Length: 79
Image 1: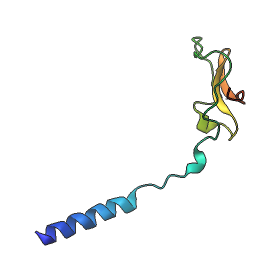
Image 2: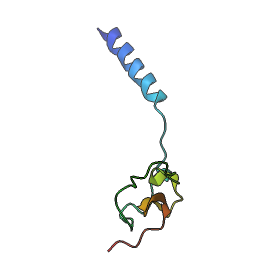
Image 3: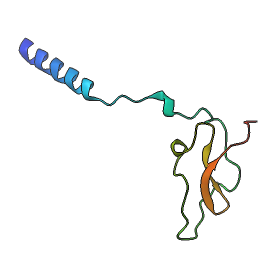
Image 4: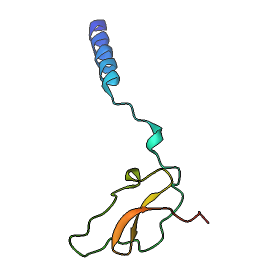
């Protein structure tokens, strides 16, 4: 029984060592801000978006729907 515990413990440790390290530097600092413009995506087919999420944008910008496109914009200050 002790051998089984040791094998399980070593196996869990090996799995833990293989987990990918995630950096907090990818978390945007402006999460409390909202985008201006329309909150809904455009329904016209063939529109090319410049970004898909906030992670595609530089640090101080957010990926926002604006008119009939989606791009990186500087959000207004939080109220």
